[in-house]
Length: 237
Image (tube, rainbow, N blue to C red; front, side, top):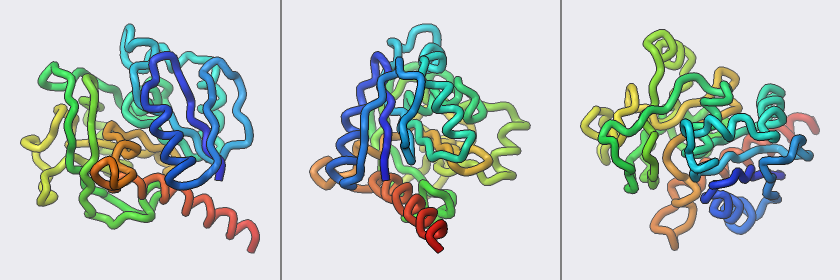
């Protein structure tokens, strides 16, 4: 499987994502500079975390207009796997590939911590190696991770089972008390209706090896590889 990691000015988690794909999963991966206007033959695209364009104007608002983004949008619309992590999630929202918007954290402070996530479903290309209801302990690092959408959009997300991860405590309880940033309905990650685009604020690439203190995040990437392998097998049959 071949991954592409898009690099914007200000990206700072691109090397982390590259390392997980190349050295942990031992899959093919390339960096893609934001000024490229076309994608090569990739099977999945990663929009990494960081501070694209210094977060000027609004997080992700300038990166959304980078020359590479029309190709990423086209790739997603054709069914390609896309994952946006932290700033990458913000860019996906600004690009219209996912609904909603990001606000400043409720505390108005930058948060660098770990959070418990509850897996809401495991029948997606990003969670097939996880269990529904499983808890994951994943690092977070953001100043604008307060996911917001209107009530109609929230109802649609629920109706279509597009909420993939929610913030919880170690016992799996969803409550505003365990919500680090104030995001509506404790949302930590959502997918599009088609299920091939994921945006999540926590950083799975930062917990994909034991040396980093845990491996809860690696199965998101393993799930993507497994999903791709299943598609290839179906095509062969």
